[in-house]
Amino acid sequence: MRPLHSSLVTLGLSAAVVLGLAVLTPVAVAPSAHAQAPNGAALYNAQCKSCHALSGKSGPAGPSLKGVAGRKVASLGDYKYSKGLTAKGGTWTDAALDAYLANPGGYAPGGKMFNKVPDPKARAAIIAYLKTQP
Ligand code: HEC
Figure 1 (cartoon, protein in one colour):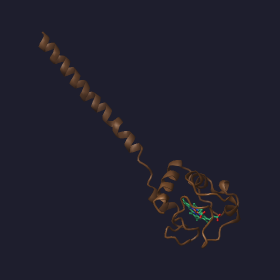
Figure 2 (cartoon, rainbow, N blue to C red):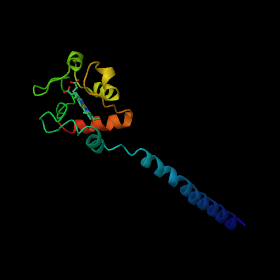
Figure 3 (cartoon, rainbow, N blue to C red):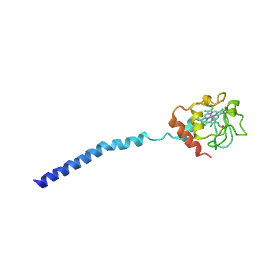
Figure 4 (cartoon, protein in one colour):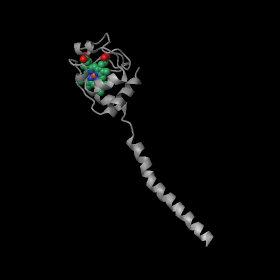
């Protein structure tokens, strides 16, 4: 009686473990697939590169973004900034870049960049990418 009972318990337990794994596996996979961070470099190339260079030289339409993280706002000598952005002043901290990319016209009224990045995760990824371009 006893051995049978305990082996039934063991069977039941291993079935529970197997079932548990079967149930848990998709749950364990889902967050990593979901948490897949947007690709900052790809976003930059798609949304910024047409106007901004990372080479250190400004153009085609905007100031160079090489080393922009931590740089003083509107501080490059080879680019003619708007009065709006120049008047804004300050430093391109993460928070400042985030606010600017969310709504450039709201951050620096009278500025001449109009491209918005509405998705906070996309902004974070782009900012992280800019930090890899000192
Ligand atoms: C259609 C052209 C265009 C696109 C696209 C564009 N920008 Fe700009 N950006 C500008 C212009 C023009 C300025 C100068 C703004 C001013 O003087 O008011 C600027 C200024 C900036 C500045 C301020 C730099 C400094 O030296 O103070 C940052 C940061 C910036 N852009 C980031 C981005 C990012 C990141 C993207 C992509 C998500 C992007 N921009 C897309 C045209 C563009």
